[in-house]
Length: 69
Image (cartoon, rainbow, N blue to C red; front, top):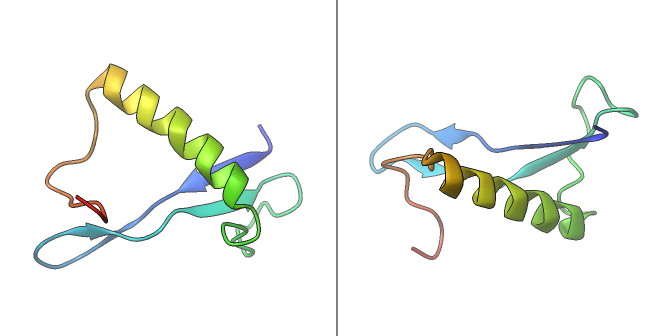
């Protein structure tokens, strides 16, 4: 797999998640170049896959509040 999509949380109350980060692992194994802004299409594709998996596995983070919720 060439792409890695990650999201970190911010500490504090209420807990919030930071925006997605996207890395091309073949070209950037050290994760130095976040490509999320340059590749919003890939972020959306991988986020949709993650959301689908999270719904099936019942692992959606809690008590995080996502933007727009």
